[in-house]
Image (cartoon, rainbow, N blue to C red; front, side, top):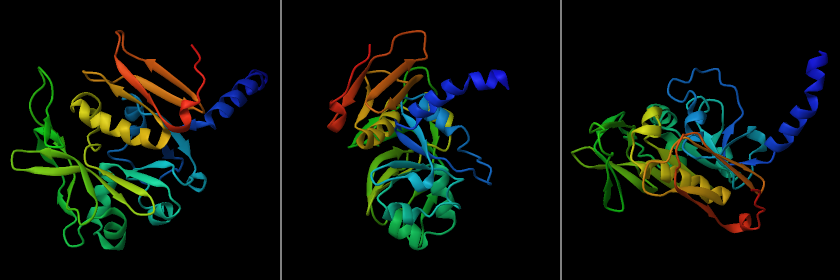
Length: 264
């Protein structure tokens, strides 16, 4: 007990810093459902340069961006969060669970899924990601093909990123604007591929989406950018390179965050 009491000042200091942390908000909610695909997803996202923070559902505010996983679908009122102006990004497994349940009012009005056939396929063997007509494949010495899914049929919304599987281009990142912005992903189900196997365009899209809502984000220069931890606390950005060699990237800042202090 004496040793624990001595740590109280340190814990208080840590909690004060954590309370001002910004980023993609993982909802602080214990799920009774086992996470089959989204387990440790926060760790994977953090290693590709996405700042991750935590908030209770009732503390989420207008303009926040919250990550919705497969365990959150049954426990959160997504429509109510959107009504409050909370932006949502749904993991692939969360999208698949909602599509399996049938589009209904939630799927069609909130997510923009086709009412009759919301789910096109659970997985496809992707050959390249396509953005604005330009293809992005994996690099040298990496076997061709990678699993992507689910593929959904959209009734409303914008397709931002497609995957080409040899038969056609299918949307794997979509955006629908209502009272908030809802993003559906089709490439977070097989998380190790997200970190090391997908081309850089996939990771950069996620960084850009989070950056729209935080005002600060990193952008890769040339090669794959992973194992770079990025924390945002107030006006302070902390970056930690976990690799034993240098990595090149841009730090983009816009909006209110331009009035920042730099600690070197």
